[in-house]
Image (cartoon, rainbow, N blue to C red; front, side, top):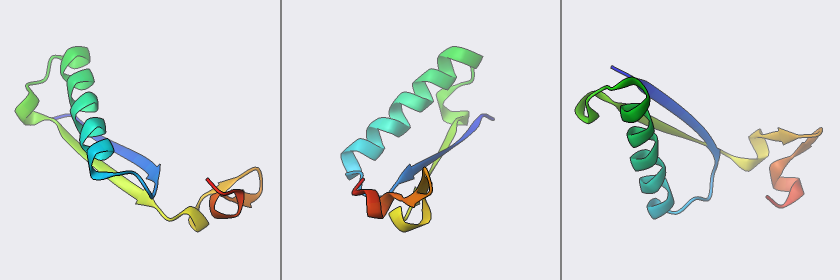
Length: 63
């Protein structure tokens, strides 16, 4: 059973997260031939203040 973990900064809409789940599922199905029903996708939403970019939090960068 393929299991994908996706880490993203918080702030995506439910529609965007749905699209990620659908597209990652389709990519795994195509790449490894797993049945769609066996594929799992887990989205981890990271608070912006917990994500650093070039020594600065994403929150402070306005991302």
